[in-house]
Length: 406
Image (cartoon, rainbow, N blue to C red; front, side):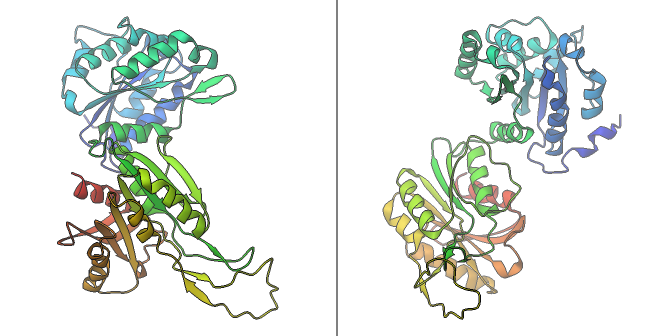
């Protein structure tokens, strides 16, 4: 049967294609947000099936979830044993999200109580080893109750993912849809980087001429952020060293540690501090290659003619590589209007000099700065292999990591 609601499936990405998501909905005042959650997950390719508690039906009509997902909504169990049908049909490609999850629902799941359709489905999902993500939403006093915190600890210990609520005033609130989306991406992606500490740099540095004027470049930081996101959803412990001037629309989940910089010196000092603990260093930031030989104090009068002499800056990539010689370094090389062979040859010099294990090279004359898309070449395996990459920066970032760490 044709369902118009399903036309949005995959319109943003195919990341969840082939995945069935069981969306369990309990009776919290935040219930309306799960309509948007269902639609967002569908836009990334998922087929969403909703199971509601009887109390949730009192807050919002199941018909609204039926409209949102294009699927019938389960509110009670019948002779069709719906909880078994949902969890036994392709469990390897199924994920269950309970959002919002009340204190009552969390406690009952932790204690194996299954007295409604939602809880029975959750119990069956646990038994089939289907990944479960719980999104709590309740008053703060209930969230802080020792019994709820003990239930949270137990559920975490058996592999259930708990997305921490946003604490505001006396409420433990439903987190952002983007936070849940990224956590879902992480849950369904192979953790090929589990246990690895990854440091990523992103954005442009500034070098000041006087106290208010500076030299910089148009880097938005998008590629570096994309690399950090893709490393994190693959299980890595990620630190993102990010320019304050970066301009992007990416959502950076709470699991990624962010350190901001502005100037060349700040970036250098942070990188050299963080590199010692890194297993993988992804250097995508656009670092200033030149700095004024003399920095003026105060503000140079706008009527004054000045002659600016520039000197080369230190090569942060080389300093970092020397600081931690065991680190797997992925360098980014930006050039202007070169042939493919010239671009690759210049990038390969990083590998030949043992500064990097892999290099991502692109020709920024092709309007890559600030764009959501990129075109690049990945040079790896001691410089012997070359892979052309093209598409959305986040998709390219994922392809880089899948190629190098499959």
